[in-house]
Amino acid sequence: MAGRHKRRSFMLVWVFCLSVLVCQGVLEFDKTEPTTVSWSDLTCTITTKKQTKTILKSLDGEIKPGRLVAILGPSGSGKTTLLNCLSGQLPYQKNQRLTGSLLINGKIPPADPALRDQAYVRQEDLFYGGLTVAETLSLHAQLRLPRRFKSLEKEIYAN
Image 1: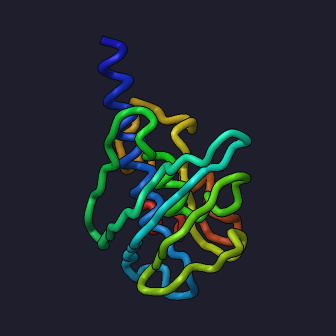
Image 2: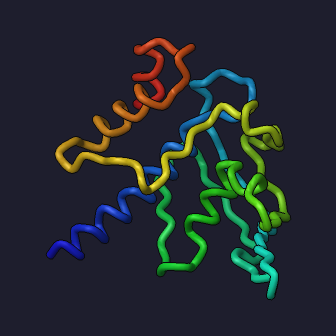
């Protein structure tokens, strides 16, 4: 029973992570504008002392506004790596090479993560099973969005 609950929570976390990623803008524009994330020929390799291994190979995809997308697959299939690529976290990790294109609303996002206005809630974060999805989004918006945003603005982002 505990294993099944863990698997369901795991899937919810991936959907939630991607929802947070898609809901945040990356470039300077009205924050209420819907966000489209698209990628093509996305390939990620990792190099160790012994070998180079391909983690993601020539992936294409698009996430349109108002769509719920779940990333599913067995352990080690590249789900976390894909989310790291889409959120701009991967290019700054050692020994990893990312090729292909990533567009946010048809534009290349800034290379510097400090210039990106987006969030990515990793699976290790604490989620409360007693909260609804809306309450969870609201809680994380309050805790994670920059201080420059007023509480009401954070609520708008979460909804």
